[in-house]
Image 1: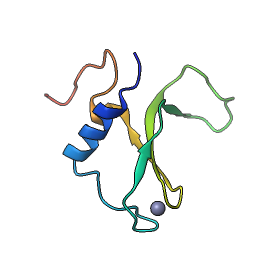
Image 2: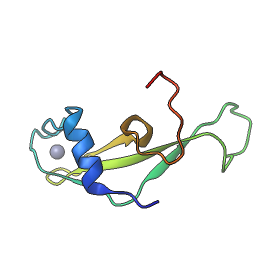
Image 3: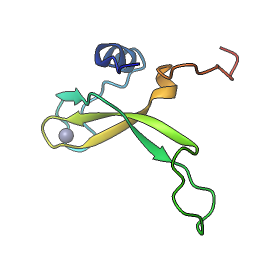
Image 4: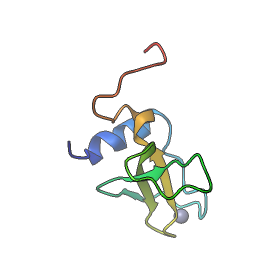
Length: 88
Ligand SMILES: [Zn+2]
């Protein structure tokens, strides 16, 4: 399933995540095509576990200063096959 940048932009706007840049105050952004994962580790002594728990993130970048702001795709209901667990 491909990332739909337009849908993500609409969802961020609907949630009020459209304020000026928290670093420079300008208001011009771009959303990267693609996502990354934060891999969650539970043990300092363990090696990096690929395929373990992770948070998929999209990134919004300020076109002026380059500040990068991640947003969890799950919070935007953008994860495939995700089951709602909060009564939605
Ligand atoms: Zn900025």
